[in-house]
Image 1 (cartoon, rainbow, N blue to C red):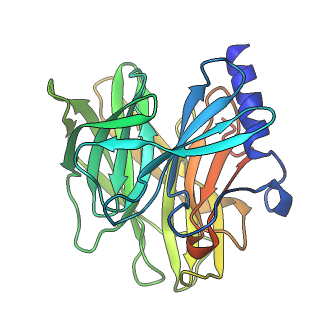
Image 2: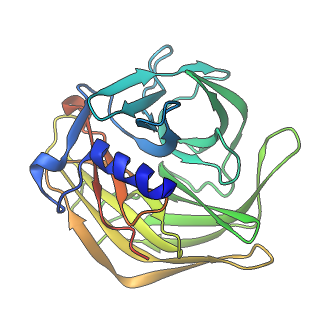
Amino acid sequence: MTWFTTTTALLAVLGGAPAGAADAWQRVGGDSRSGVSGLAYEGRTEDGDGVNALVVHDNKRSGQPRLSRITRTENSTVIAPLAWEGAEPVDLEAVEAVPGMPGEYLALTGRGILYRLKVAGSTATVVDYTPLPAIGEGDDFESFALVARDGKLAALWADRGAGAGRPATLYAASLTFAPWGQPLFGSVSQRTYRSSYPADDATRHISDIALTDSGRILVGSAGDAGDDGPFDSAVSDAGRVTVSATGRVRITLAASPTVLGRFPGYKIEAVECLPGSSDAALGTDDENLGGYVRTVPFCVT
């Protein structure tokens, strides 16, 4: 019942409607500094009447917001920047809650620096940070996801790719933490991925990743023609990930990814499967046009 109530509340926050319905999007930012580059469900408010979600912004200048909280109750939506304590990142593109570690998150920059955060109240504190392993030449990251199976933790992330000449590269590895907090990766596997839609020269083949409870890999893809658009996006069923009892990670990508929904006019950079639900929260970073959020029923097992 708790999960049902939580999910129902979050659906009210973000607006559930068929894919592509224009009125399903809720605006949460009005300029290039407030778009949604990544999104993580945080939990219910202390009084139990609302829900919180964390979003990262791809700002690059010192003092600009890096992390904000969206708080939604039945009657209001409040968006508030969080104070950042510790080394200041440049260009945050993804954020993910760490399973089994309440209040802890991993946030990734476009250049591949991974920050481990502890969020308490209105402050995010850097516990440690480290570069991703196996960074390839020209890699530009917008996605990060975690999967937990039988006490084992694994991570997926991807170079976004660029048009017909550069497919995305999807990476996967087991993940543990050193006693002092640093993320530690096991051996890395990788696969190339091309989106079915959009598929023009401005395509970012993987703009975010989400995982369902059964291990299906959902991929956001985006077309970005510049700071004023036009934009285009889709979410696709790209394949599956499994984690063995020994922690070995295996990715199986579909030969022809299934497009679950198309979203012309928006640049999706956040895809998050909501706990206890078949719904995915989507967030956009539409540059000068701001940011939007909504939900769609894409996380069906």
